[in-house]
Image (cartoon, rainbow, N blue to C red; front, side, top):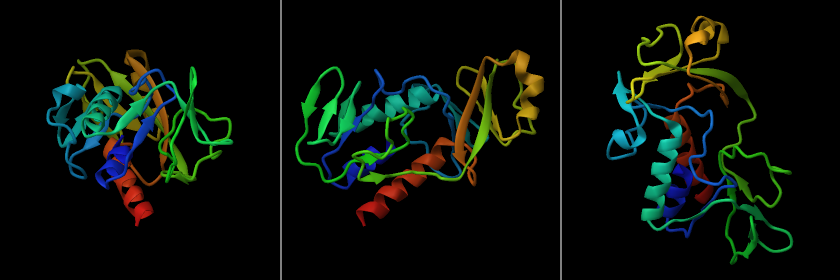
Amino acid sequence: MVAAERYLSHGHDTLLITAHAEFGFPHGGCGLWNLSNEPWPLDTLEEAVGEDTSGVVACRSQWLVKRLVHRFAEAGGQVTCRARFENEPEPLLRGTGAMPLPALDHVVLADQDVPEPDLHRGITHVLVDEPHTAVWHGRILPPHHDLPADVEAGGRRGDGTVEVWTQHPDLLQPLAEHAIEHLQVAWADDDLPTADAVASRSRAAVDAFLG
């Protein structure tokens, strides 16, 4: 979402697609946003079901995605769901049907969580391609739980639930029977798993690619 909005801000006609039935499809991504690194991107916290906990906004990541794609569309961006880009022999979108595309300057694969038959087929640029990653383990805990002090990242959501992330799953074992959700992501190994880190790297990658 951030990358598409950045391309749009540079004056490019931008089409954002997903193979899912909707943007913000349920996934195990991180919903933490560190305010010491990046300002919160929305006008309110409530729209993303989040609250500020000691400088960290903890939100449902699916809601954040939905709100960001709404903002992208309001700014003039184009969106479509249930579609994949193909470039053989001519550029088109293929989903329930096939729709030809006009001449394209760039096709960008950014933070794709839907496995492709061939990740780089027809792709002219991969925005964020992390060859070195670490596995982070997450838990969503009920509202009556305190934020554990020994995990690397965490925050309390607006609905009271607690989201925590660590590279050390043994730290989460005592919480297993109380957890509402068990999450896992592969993340750049030099970053805490926060959405603001993705936003910052995505904007920098777009700016560098466009020169």
